[in-house]
Length: 232
Image (cartoon, rainbow, N blue to C red):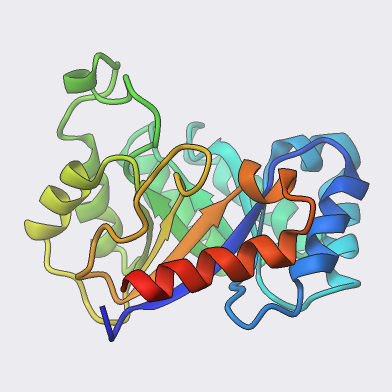
């Protein structure tokens, strides 16, 4: 995969702000770091402005907010969501638009008006998400979301490493631009293979538990990137 660009995103999915700070400080200078993903655990426990302030003391890389999962509300709430993130200093936001196309369109528009980059999720890493896996959502859900988001000009998507066949089928039916960006959870503790999707050129790997538990997060990231580069 000589043309593939890998970057790393630590998922700061913990409750302890000092635990998150330890990881941020350790990897902030890593040459292949893309940014940091913040979820509701830190956001609701400490407040997003305080969390962003902590990260900014160590890094100017993008701070991505993942509400686990945003865009599951009525369309009108997109403006409030976007305003909250903008005031906190968030740079990018992940949407999983399970509330339908009207919500997706409204929340994309609201985030853009707040100058926040939009990332849209189509599949989650765990089993029993789609009906074909024993879940609630139609098997057509990923394709419908992907198609609508692209029609709105979105070029950044969440695709899980744990479901390569479903992702490859989705992307095979919808040719992607070289500038498209793909954010992938599932590396590390969930056993996803980062060599999946060789046709994706800009690939950002989201890693949480493995990095948070590492005694030396910087060394863990160095080794993981070295092994990945050696395989590619």
